[in-house]
Image 1: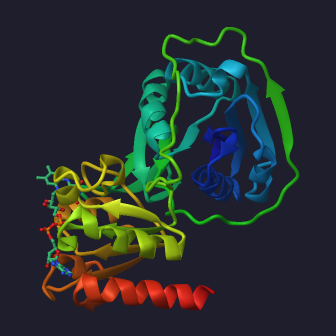
Image 2: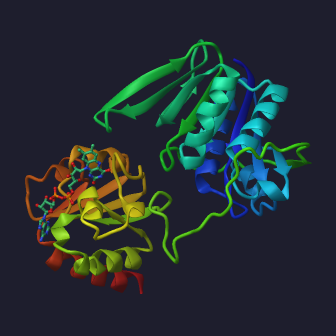
Length: 321
Ligand code: FAD
C-alpha cells in the first residue's frame, strides 16, 4: 500500500506522553516494508521531548508551535490536524485512545470522510485499507473491524502496543499556525495534588467494598506507594463516597492497561473487568475463592485483605530497599 501515516503526539505540560510513543512504534512498524511514509505532528508551545520520537522510528516531526496551543483546544487542534492531514494526503491518522484522542478522532474522521477505528488493541494494513480488533460489550467480546476505503482514523488503547526501540535521525519542522480557531478553549488544567493518574499508571492497586470502609484504604495506598503505582477503586466504593470518581476503574470509570493491576476486595463484576481486563498481569486478593475476579487473574490469593495487604507491602518494601 502507498500512502502517508500521520501520528498525532499528545503533550501535557510540554511533555509528550508515553502512549504517543506507543503510537509512533506501531506506526513505524506499519510503515516498514510498505510504501507508507510516516510523519508525527505535535501541537503545543515548548515541548521538551520531541526528539524522543526518533527512538521509535519517527524521522519527521512537525511541531505546530503557538503559546495559545499549550492547552488543548478541540477546535484549534482539529483544524491544524486536518490541514496537515490534507497537505500530507494522510490515509491513516493515528492517535492514542486517551481523553484527547477520543475527543479528536471522531472530529477528524467526519471531516476526512474516513472510517474510524476506536480503542484498537490490534491494528494492521489490509487489502482495502486498515483492519483492527477492539473490545466491545464491556470487554466481553472482541470485534474485528475494517476501514475499506483505503483510509482511516484510528485510536489505540494505551499500554497495549509495545515501545519498540528503532533509533532514527529526527528532523523537526517548526510551524506557526496562521489563525488558530479558538472557538473552544481549555482555560486551565489542574492535576490532583501529588497523585498519579490511574489512567496513566503502569502499576495500579485498586480497592473495593472488601476494604469495609474508607478508613482502611490506607492499606491500598501503602501497597501502591511501595510499588510506585497509583490507587484505583471500584464503582461501589466511589458511589459510597469512600474514594473520588477520578480513581474509578471500569465501564463508567477509566479504562486502564497497566503492566500490573492488583485488585483488593473487588468482586470482579463485568463492568469492573471492562476497564482493567487488558492489564498485562492481574493479581487478585479476595476472601471468596469463587469471586469472578479470579477468572481474569494471573495470580490469585484467597484471603483477607486485612491480613494479606500489610504483609505484601512489607515484603515489597524489604525487596526494594
Ligand atoms: P462487591 O461486589 O460488593 O465485592 C466486594 C468483594 O470483596 C467481594 O468479592 C468479597 O468477597 C470481597 N471481600 C469482602 N471482604 C473481604 C476481605 N476482608 N478480604 C478480601 N476480600 C473481601 N463497577 C466498577 O467497578 N466500575 C465501573 O465503571 C462500573 N460501572 C457500572 C456501570 C453500570 C451500568 C452498572 C450497572 C454497574 C457498574 N459497576 C461498575 C458496578 C458493578 O456492577 C459492581 O457493583 C461493582 O464493581 C462492585 O464493586 P466491588 O467489587 O467493590 O464490591
